[in-house]
Image (cartoon, rainbow, N blue to C red; front, side, top):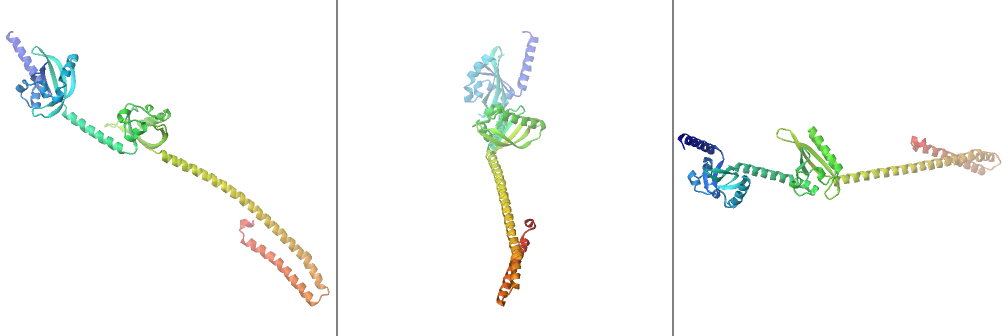
Length: 363
């Protein structure tokens, strides 16, 4: 090999080493038996080993004992596919664990087949995932504590999840089971599903929430029920509508009670009208009887008055003019006074009767 070619090779190696060491992920090169042949500066820094120390170690030494058991299978997959990506747990020089996303690829190193492993520390990602999962768990716990049913859909009206109360109405056990389903996959009838989706589209189009929607729905056990539903559009961080959030309360018992009360009220009103009609008929009959009674009494009074004035009184006057003794005359006078008193009593009775009647009764 002449000097210029050797210089170029050295320059290429320097360039490779510079690139090798400038990457922000740990890079290992190991042979097919797992012996580490090379490592970059970041690997030395992150794991706490010197470069020389790494070259005395096996790749399994940076794995936890549990993860080291999978090395053989990973090599087999690598030989089959040429490249694999997997998650594992590594150990630093102080035996502290940290999660790694590793990408392994077959390659050549100094004339032999080797494995190039790029290990990306995903500690922050795992912490973020843990925080997100804890947040989701807390949110789900809060949602499951709400007695009302809660559900949410994407902009294509595909269910993304729901709380425990809502799942109970669908006959499903978890949000994972409902994910990807539409209203037509759930117990509701087609007409109910059509109505639900029409409401959803209207709300997402207008961006205006709707509250206290009274609507029927079919339970998972096949019984018909009533719900009072509230729906609001779901928005992303930029304010774009990306779905719909709904809550509803089962008001079947209340609705049935209201319907029963309304029916009872209607029945009562009908009975009141019937009773009023009966009372009107009785009242009319009483008026007729009273009128007939008064007419009969008037006829009798007129007849008696006529007989007194036209028959009795004239005959008494004639009798008085005949030859009578004083006692007889006195007796006739007493009889006449009594008869006059009777006619006066008739007149006073009629007057008192009309004084105690109302104008409508007199009429």
